[in-house]
Amino acid sequence: MTQEKRDRIPWLLGGTLALAALVLIGIPLLQASAQQPGSPHGSRMMGQGSGPMMRGDGMCPMGGQMPAVPFPDDELPNPTSQGAVAFKQYCMQCHALPSPRAHSADEWDTSLVRMLHRMQMMEQEKTASWGRWMPDIAAPSAGEVEHLRRYLKENALRTAPESLSPRSKGPGGVQFAQVCSQCHALPDPALHTAAEWPDVVSRMHTNMQRMAVPPPNDDARAQILAFLMEHARS
Image (cartoon, rainbow, N blue to C red; front, top):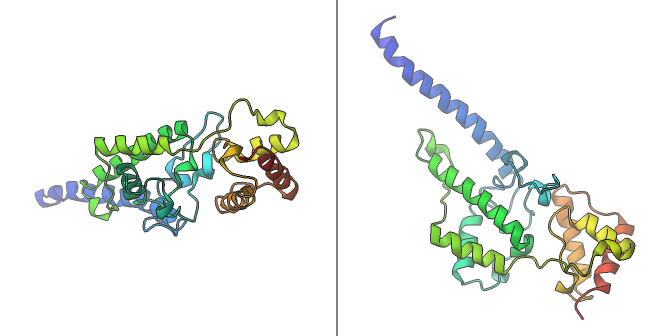
């Protein structure tokens, strides 16, 4: 083998590894991007191929995907606060804006750690030889992370009180516990009035269909709604 051919070997190996990395990373990202029309980059952070968060019972909250319809950013609590600004800036790099109530405070702790890890990983990959093909993702600073964590915990989903014990409240409570826990912690029925719950339940039903989570049938949905209206905020 000539010296010229030996000199080419490292370049050929490097090119082959870079091409393999593009295939392994790029295809899942493109597939995830098609799932999320509300974002310029799609739901690569929450896609099924990206290792979605798993609960202790093995269930994947939100079906491993984000809702197709983004949460209106002008409806965010304290929209000009440092936490809200960081929430919009960093979360919308990869998927449509979720509601701060998408998770309970404990669930946000887990989700935030996972998202930070992925942003940091993608930011670091930009420095690799194939980095110019990677999306331009930036990770928040330590200070921004604290603002973000505080904001999400303060505005997280308020969960049902232990005193309610939905499973002991008849068929409606049982259906509520089984169906709603597929996507998030059980919400406090007192979050809404009886007049507000029908629209909320309708929106959740649509979200479940979009995220490929089995929605309740008509009878179960009626039982859930009756339970929520019975324990709603007066």
